[in-house]
Image (cartoon, rainbow, N blue to C red; front, side):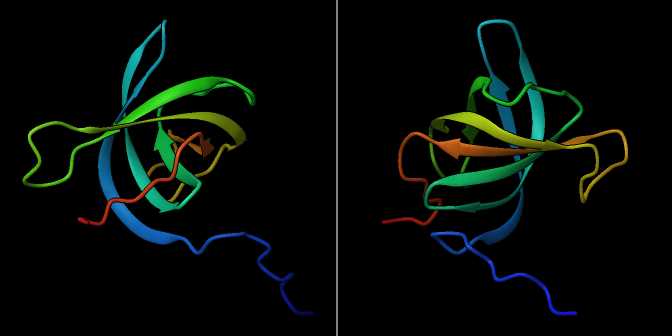
Length: 102
């Protein structure tokens, strides 16, 4: 049995970068596990409902201020690649996401 084709529009870049998740109700730490031009997978000990709006802040080494990306939670999973206590959040970003230096 073969695996289904990956139907993502943009390729993912794996990483392990600390992030902060921010909404009106909380600020919480997590780990950016991978990202693409239009989304990210973040692991956090916080479960958000599908459709929730969140801002995640990523601090690139050498930058004075973090990059802030607004997104919508599109999927959640009770497993992650970092800890069994954490939830994997699939977030669609509202703006192009690039951690590369231009």
